[in-house]
Image (tube, rainbow, N blue to C red):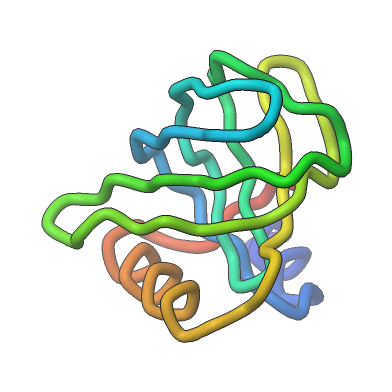
Length: 113
């Protein structure tokens, strides 16, 4: 096991690095972006057209082939250059299903945020 994987194992929810097209909707507006990481606790988006302020409620639409699109709700927890991190508003089976599907598609846990 490499150092990145060990660091990720300390987290309660492993994150998976992705690169899926997404749409973000909030009171700040709507825009496209890339879902960069996802876990049972939240997600990180990059290359987004809009970066809502911390605390903003957002709806995330994720498009993964061949999985049907997902609509998820959460709050912005951190703003970073060209993107942001969010936590889910309410954890439910749809989020679990999405993360499980993503983990089956991608190669392994992420090492970032």
